[in-house]
Image (cartoon, rainbow, N blue to C red):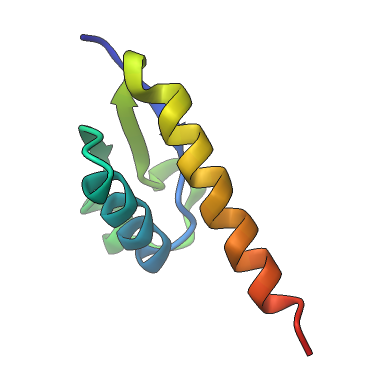
Length: 78
């Protein structure tokens, strides 16, 4: 099954959260440039890309949007 790009994490911490979420949900994934991006942080051309199978893309997008919503809700509280 072909894999397509799900997201481009902006940090190693964000990558860890995303991969943990995908693993916990039983979604197969692959990380492109996982180790290269840690050698030169801040260079956008070397950022990691999280790839998922095409058949799981929609489900992974929904999970990722819930994660982003939860993070945003917590940070906006006084």
